[in-house]
Image (cartoon, rainbow, N blue to C red; front, side):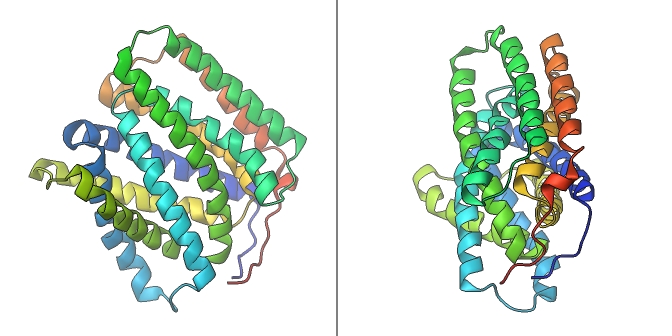
Length: 300
């Protein structure tokens, strides 16, 4: 697949926009999880996502994916299902900003997985910037730990931490997937495979049709998920995973904003201090695009 040349900085900014939309989806999903539960929310959102992404992908497709590419689609779809169940279940039990803060261990792990699996060279500035951003996460965690959120929040936090480890691997698969498939193809098969995997889970946990009033929110969540996946797939086809991992840290800023706007979650001084470190880390990571030259061609 031939990938057009774009500067790494362009890919970085598109990645930031993709994360912003994904964070908006997280806010909508939190409300849905509280209303109808995590399993139902994930299933119905992805079912709608099949319709949205299919309307864009199917009329334009030039053929079905090759067997190796399909294996990548399936691997990421199954992994994303487990990741989503854990994350959104936990999201219903902890503040939005705290959930994102816990999830920030994923980009840091992804840096080293990118080196081990993709054989990418990790520049010193990228590592230093990610560590600085992670220090911001630690500051936020210290502030959150001072509040007594109860046993449910503790279990929810553990679920999010496990989800974050899975998401680190997801970032690496996303990079490989983006080099062999177009964004529309990736987005469509992601929705299909997650929905199919959820169908294997539903007989054990049950599911019901959501109330009519929840459907606009499900459509909004699906639309935000599709748009964010398109943007992230575009970005990961044009810059290395180790470089784009830093964009994940901007999710906290959006989570803090959406948590305050929609759930009356207070942003503490610890949160603000950590956010500053996160922003500085992202800026430093984006200053060395020469360390993130992408592979422009890959065989399908």
